[in-house]
Length: 127
Image (cartoon, rainbow, N blue to C red):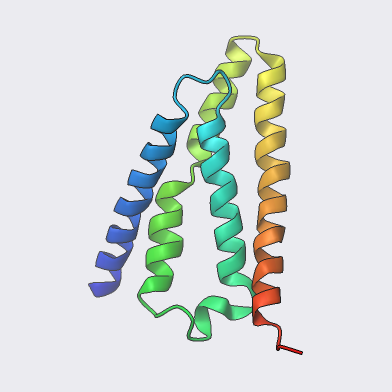
């Protein structure tokens, strides 16, 4: 039960952050808010799961699911990305649809790689 509560709290915080980013970037023609939260989530998850970062004592058994499943699960959004892309296609906004797909994919993968690289650098023994 404690684990579920930790996930719920993480989810509530992630949802609030996602809403805050959405409000901060409201009114832009491109779906920047979705891109920002997805890229940030990719980076953080890449950093957290690399080389057992979460299982080597740096995150507790409660904070790991709270951050990964709860916070990042609520912060990032594949369904909104999909809907925004379909809406661009329906509006014949081919360039925006392509930019949305490519930017989420390419920048998201780059952010994940950057998170993994950061975790490796932090885990490397000092010379």
